[in-house]
View 1 (spheres, rainbow, N blue to C red):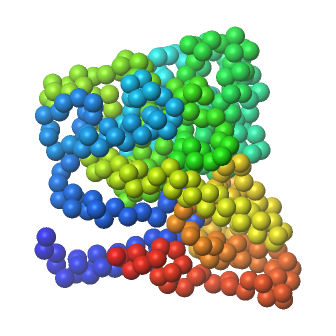
View 2: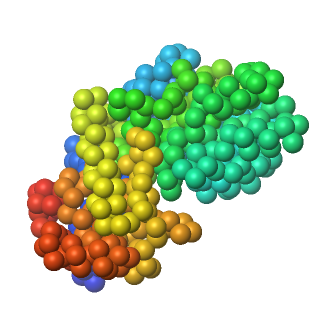
Length: 408
Ligand SMILES: *Cc1c(COP(=O)(O)O)cnc(C)c1O
């Protein structure tokens, strides 16, 4: 490729921008700690996974073999027999949620979808696109769905086939809806297991809970019908991606035969990214369960560190069990912008993704939050000269990403 001098300069500028900001992210759950250099050479190929990885396709430049391995991994991780499951590599959590809702609607065309007010905004798009009847349910203060309100709304609607959209880690508060309570309450209400659908949105926590000591129940063994996880969040990926896993017998109802590629297509898009299955495959092949556990433990420890420091500074911070999302009162727009925080109403959060290998960036943010909200506490802190760094950490090669900050 030959670019003009001006265009090359423009790319160089963007390259510097990316280098400078690659580890900045603290308000969003994207983990930047990854290395897929072994896959870079495949970028010259138009790899396309159109259709079902389990079938033969006439489009030979596909990475179906890798996608199959990825799906086997997640079937095992989420407690469903490989032969009883079916799923694929998606464009991200939203597509996985859409796939789960699509399956549910095919099973229960007149069913109402219930989701808590703390649910990711993508569900609003999904119910519109799929024209599913829906009802927002109140959330408890920690972000979990309000089980009483859920059951009250199902009863008020006289709904015989509820579709429950459960959060396994909400976006703003990292709350996990209790699958066991939901199922027990539905049973008490006289709704049999075959008469409702339970989708689990585990965009971030789907790669956290399998690697903690006491996870909240969230797998097929716990009673879910489908689950989605984002690949660019806890795992980390240069291209947004994710997976969805569902029960094979439900998926078989939505298969569309396509003679053009001579395969059946159960997926939502036509052409599908052939590179992201390889990215996810490489991530899973290069990290043992023990390594995921270490990564998750590190992130959870960093989250608790942030809670402790904020609380010591007089800021009302907290987090849910097994969550790397630290919730605290919204700081000024200036701080939110400087640190790229996601805010909602009067709360903000920071997320201790694995690329925060030390606490310097977290400390810098917390220092500013305390100095702004509790100047008297902050002055006392400074007098004890405990932690006087109110500046962003200098751009060095050591604080987060090691040598890779230089662009390898
Ligand atoms: C991020 C997120 C999504 C959306 O996932 P994308 O990969 O961005 O499409 C859905 N649900 C939750 C809980 C999320 O955190």
